Image (cartoon, rainbow, N blue to C red; front, top):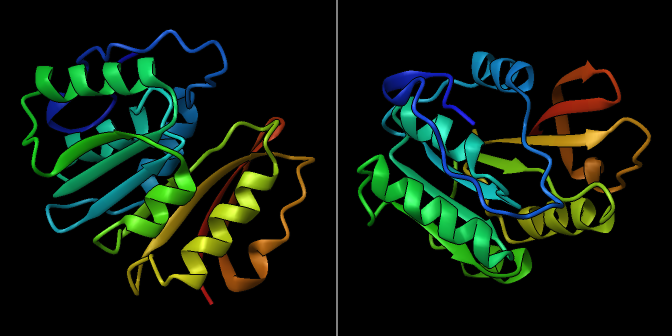
Length: 180
Protein backbone atom coordinates (compact mmCIF):
# COMPACT_ATOMS: atom_id res chain seq x y z
CA UNK A 1 0.00 0.00 0.00
CA UNK A 2 1.40 3.38 -1.02
CA UNK A 3 0.85 6.95 0.14
CA UNK A 4 -0.84 8.91 -2.66
CA UNK A 5 -0.33 12.55 -1.63
CA UNK A 6 2.11 14.99 -0.11
CA UNK A 7 5.76 14.78 0.87
CA UNK A 8 5.70 10.99 1.34
CA UNK A 9 3.92 10.34 -1.96
CA UNK A 10 4.71 6.89 -3.41
CA UNK A 11 6.28 5.61 -0.18
CA UNK A 12 5.14 2.12 0.72
CA UNK A 13 3.44 1.43 4.04
CA UNK A 14 3.97 -1.75 6.01
CA UNK A 15 0.58 -3.23 6.86
CA UNK A 16 -0.31 -5.60 9.66
CA UNK A 17 -1.59 -9.12 9.09
CA UNK A 18 -5.18 -8.44 10.17
CA UNK A 19 -7.50 -10.38 7.85
CA UNK A 20 -10.51 -8.26 8.89
CA UNK A 21 -9.06 -5.03 7.47
CA UNK A 22 -10.70 -3.29 4.53
CA UNK A 23 -8.08 -0.80 3.36
CA UNK A 24 -9.48 2.41 1.92
CA UNK A 25 -9.21 2.22 -1.86
CA UNK A 26 -7.16 4.77 -3.83
CA UNK A 27 -10.29 6.25 -5.42
CA UNK A 28 -11.87 6.77 -1.99
CA UNK A 29 -8.64 8.33 -0.66
CA UNK A 30 -8.63 10.70 -3.64
CA UNK A 31 -12.18 11.80 -2.86
CA UNK A 32 -11.43 12.25 0.84
CA UNK A 33 -8.23 14.24 0.40
CA UNK A 34 -9.56 16.38 -2.44
CA UNK A 35 -12.38 17.51 -0.11
CA UNK A 36 -10.36 17.95 3.10
CA UNK A 37 -8.01 20.85 3.58
CA UNK A 38 -5.01 19.51 5.47
CA UNK A 39 -2.24 21.81 6.66
CA UNK A 40 0.26 22.12 9.49
CA UNK A 41 -2.44 23.34 11.90
CA UNK A 42 -4.66 20.25 11.55
CA UNK A 43 -4.90 17.45 14.06
CA UNK A 44 -6.27 14.07 13.06
CA UNK A 45 -7.74 11.09 14.89
CA UNK A 46 -7.84 7.86 12.88
CA UNK A 47 -10.30 5.58 14.72
CA UNK A 48 -10.42 1.90 13.78
CA UNK A 49 -7.27 2.77 11.86
CA UNK A 50 -6.51 -0.61 10.28
CA UNK A 51 -3.60 0.02 7.94
CA UNK A 52 -3.39 3.62 9.15
CA UNK A 53 -3.37 4.79 5.53
CA UNK A 54 -5.75 7.73 6.06
CA UNK A 55 -3.69 9.04 8.96
CA UNK A 56 -0.48 8.66 6.96
CA UNK A 57 -1.99 10.53 4.00
CA UNK A 58 -2.91 13.35 6.41
CA UNK A 59 0.62 13.33 7.87
CA UNK A 60 2.11 13.42 4.37
CA UNK A 61 -0.05 16.44 3.55
CA UNK A 62 1.31 18.27 6.60
CA UNK A 63 -1.03 17.51 9.52
CA UNK A 64 0.49 18.67 12.80
CA UNK A 65 -0.69 15.68 14.82
CA UNK A 66 -2.14 12.25 14.03
CA UNK A 67 -3.26 9.65 16.55
CA UNK A 68 -4.14 6.16 15.31
CA UNK A 69 -6.50 4.01 17.41
CA UNK A 70 -7.03 0.29 16.83
CA UNK A 71 -7.44 -2.74 19.07
CA UNK A 72 -5.28 -5.07 16.95
CA UNK A 73 -1.68 -5.38 18.15
CA UNK A 74 -0.20 -6.30 14.73
CA UNK A 75 -1.91 -3.31 13.18
CA UNK A 76 -0.51 -0.95 15.82
CA UNK A 77 2.97 -2.46 15.48
CA UNK A 78 2.85 -1.87 11.70
CA UNK A 79 1.68 1.73 12.20
CA UNK A 80 4.49 2.35 14.71
CA UNK A 81 7.01 0.95 12.24
CA UNK A 82 5.66 3.30 9.54
CA UNK A 83 5.90 6.27 11.91
CA UNK A 84 9.61 5.44 12.37
CA UNK A 85 10.26 4.75 8.67
CA UNK A 86 8.69 8.08 7.68
CA UNK A 87 10.66 9.84 10.44
CA UNK A 88 7.53 11.42 11.94
CA UNK A 89 7.84 13.18 15.30
CA UNK A 90 6.84 10.52 17.82
CA UNK A 91 5.44 13.17 20.17
CA UNK A 92 2.78 14.20 17.65
CA UNK A 93 2.31 10.98 15.69
CA UNK A 94 1.24 8.12 17.95
CA UNK A 95 -0.54 4.79 17.64
CA UNK A 96 -2.51 3.29 20.50
CA UNK A 97 -3.74 -0.27 20.93
CA UNK A 98 -6.94 0.34 22.81
CA UNK A 99 -10.70 0.22 22.58
CA UNK A 100 -12.13 3.25 20.76
CA UNK A 101 -14.44 4.08 23.69
CA UNK A 102 -11.53 4.36 26.11
CA UNK A 103 -9.50 6.37 23.60
CA UNK A 104 -12.31 8.84 22.95
CA UNK A 105 -12.84 9.43 26.66
CA UNK A 106 -9.12 10.04 27.30
CA UNK A 107 -8.14 12.07 24.25
CA UNK A 108 -6.44 15.32 25.28
CA UNK A 109 -7.03 17.41 22.14
CA UNK A 110 -9.93 18.29 19.83
CA UNK A 111 -9.19 16.80 16.42
CA UNK A 112 -9.95 18.85 13.33
CA UNK A 113 -10.53 15.62 11.41
CA UNK A 114 -11.76 12.26 12.67
CA UNK A 115 -11.66 9.26 10.35
CA UNK A 116 -14.34 6.78 11.39
CA UNK A 117 -14.33 3.43 9.63
CA UNK A 118 -15.22 0.57 11.99
CA UNK A 119 -15.70 -2.96 10.70
CA UNK A 120 -18.99 -3.08 8.78
CA UNK A 121 -20.03 -6.09 10.85
CA UNK A 122 -19.85 -3.95 14.00
CA UNK A 123 -22.62 -1.51 13.07
CA UNK A 124 -23.16 -0.41 16.67
CA UNK A 125 -19.64 1.08 16.72
CA UNK A 126 -20.70 3.85 14.32
CA UNK A 127 -23.48 5.01 16.63
CA UNK A 128 -21.39 4.55 19.78
CA UNK A 129 -18.45 6.53 18.39
CA UNK A 130 -20.63 9.36 17.03
CA UNK A 131 -22.48 9.61 20.34
CA UNK A 132 -19.28 9.71 22.44
CA UNK A 133 -17.73 12.31 20.10
CA UNK A 134 -20.82 14.52 20.38
CA UNK A 135 -21.53 13.99 24.11
CA UNK A 136 -17.92 14.71 25.09
CA UNK A 137 -17.48 17.62 22.66
CA UNK A 138 -14.39 15.96 21.17
CA UNK A 139 -14.45 17.38 17.63
CA UNK A 140 -12.94 20.84 17.02
CA UNK A 141 -15.50 23.59 16.38
CA UNK A 142 -15.02 23.51 12.59
CA UNK A 143 -14.00 19.87 12.62
CA UNK A 144 -15.08 17.19 10.17
CA UNK A 145 -15.80 13.51 10.64
CA UNK A 146 -15.13 11.37 7.57
CA UNK A 147 -17.19 8.22 7.87
CA UNK A 148 -17.01 5.21 5.56
CA UNK A 149 -19.94 2.81 5.62
CA UNK A 150 -21.76 0.18 3.62
CA UNK A 151 -24.77 1.62 1.72
CA UNK A 152 -27.31 -0.57 3.50
CA UNK A 153 -26.01 0.20 6.99
CA UNK A 154 -28.42 2.26 9.09
CA UNK A 155 -26.84 4.78 11.47
CA UNK A 156 -29.01 6.48 14.10
CA UNK A 157 -26.60 9.05 15.57
CA UNK A 158 -26.59 11.28 12.47
CA UNK A 159 -29.15 13.51 14.22
CA UNK A 160 -26.36 15.28 16.12
CA UNK A 161 -24.49 16.09 12.90
CA UNK A 162 -24.99 17.80 9.58
CA UNK A 163 -24.06 15.84 6.47
CA UNK A 164 -21.98 18.20 4.32
CA UNK A 165 -21.17 15.67 1.60
CA UNK A 166 -22.17 12.10 0.83
CA UNK A 167 -20.20 10.36 -1.92
CA UNK A 168 -21.43 6.96 -3.08
CA UNK A 169 -18.86 4.53 -4.48
CA UNK A 170 -20.50 1.27 -5.47
CA UNK A 171 -21.83 -0.27 -2.25
CA UNK A 172 -19.96 2.18 -0.01
CA UNK A 173 -20.68 5.70 1.23
CA UNK A 174 -18.08 8.27 2.22
CA UNK A 175 -19.89 10.79 4.39
CA UNK A 176 -18.46 14.09 5.63
CA UNK A 177 -20.11 15.30 8.85
CA UNK A 178 -19.98 18.47 10.93
CA UNK A 179 -21.65 19.05 14.27
CA UNK A 180 -25.13 20.56 14.04
